[in-house]
Length: 233
Image (cartoon, rainbow, N blue to C red; front, side, top):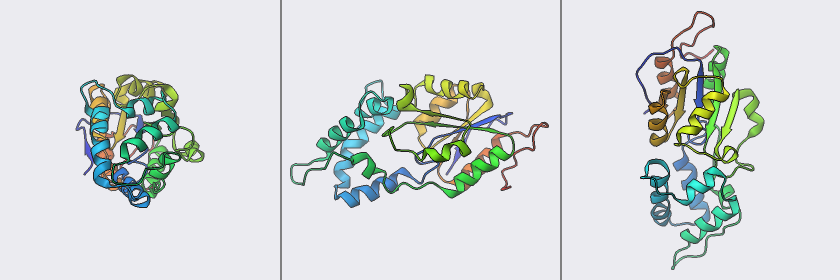
């Protein structure tokens, strides 16, 4: 269920995460990869769960995810690290080359989210992308970006990552906005918490219809634009 901060505000921009928001759920994408590669889901969870906990809600300690998302290691280096961790004593080795590509092969862009972004832009709102990258080189359909976003911030390209405060502030600044003029939409609770502390309106995404509803409750109508009422246009 999408959750949002409750203050009605004059919003000029909506900033979206990519994976799990503009695309379908990450859990389903990863499950398809595990099945295709014959990787034990329990072993994957045992490896990845502590990394993710450190990356998005930890106590300051770092995991391999931090370095990947900041662009401090190459895709190939991360693939070797993860493949080695996933290779169990009783199972076949996990192939490192192309691991990230295979991991996200089942990812699909949500048509409903594309319509939502188009509706926001038609109402006069500015839209942006703020994404932690797992593979900078070819992990995004960049040919779509020009019609979706006024600016794009990808963590590995700027050397910082969510939930670091500075990347949220960078995303707002590049849109020429203050945090309080923006709503940030993400599927990761730690990122939502970090953005809210900086004054962003927030929507914790779970599915497109609920995110549309939550945005309609956050965005006040300004007289100098057509206005956003949450409806398809």
